Amino acid sequence: MQTRFTLRQLEYLVAVGRFGSISLAAHHLSVSPPSISNAIAQLEAEFGLPAFVRKHAQGMTLTQAGRALMAQAVQVLEAARTLSNLADQHNGTVRGDLNVGCLLTFAQIIVPRLRRAFTTAFPEVTFRQFQYHQAGLIEALRDATIDIAITYDLMIPADMEFTPLANLPPFAMLPAAHPLATRSSLSLAELAPSPMIFLDLPISGAYFMSLFDQAGVTPRIVERSHDMAVVRSLVGNDFGYSVANARPFAPTAPDGKELAFVPLTGGLKPVRMGILSTAGGKSSLTVKTFVSLCEKMIDPTMQAQISINAKE
Image (cartoon, rainbow, N blue to C red; front, side, top):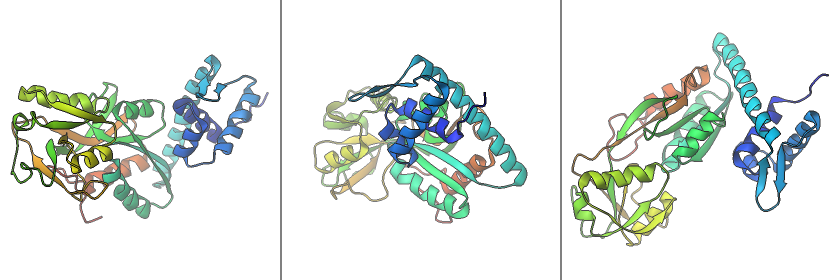
């Protein structure tokens, strides 16, 4: 019996399995929800079994058979990608899909300019960007939702490869009118008694707490948020200070309040920003070319601010 399904349908199956929702999968793939819904229905009809349990309030949950189908679909998509990459390398052509993930804390600072430079130079590439926290990036790499990720060197699994691009030492973020905002540097001991707005993300949050452990002090956390934009606005409105590694180009919070960024003393451990991939994940010509662009555009000597070289 001839099986009739497309790689695109398998891609939709994997996306829904990963996000647990047709609407979320559609958003991340930039397609309409009916397109994904129809593709899933066609696959289930072709295979003669349900891949998902539909729960109106809780989204889509993979059945046991659906989990097996998704695992196999990931392998088929990876094999197809390998074939396409092989052809592109022989042809010397940079084209096809490029799915780039980025850490939530600096996705809005760095990816759009890299994307613009890359897609202008290589218009045959379909570039998609995804934003996750660190654990989400690792999961997305493993299930092939993304090809590579721009992130920090925090809790990197042994089966993945990290290519460093820049060092990012930690700094204090303060409201511009704060008494300490004009200082050339600060210690965590000086900041610890003040109220802190904590960026509470998986893995990244543990890194920030380790800085206070290294300094031998305990922060007085009064507010937690998973959203860096919210943290900046709370700081800008004088609800406390925060600690971060990636500062925006403009010294303002999203609501326009002015911020100050002060380097921290004490030899605190910086993080390295770089490219994360699965073993062999940078083998395609398109991915290699994008990594090369990142290495050229991102300044490896930057200190407190992510900077992208003007010569794009």
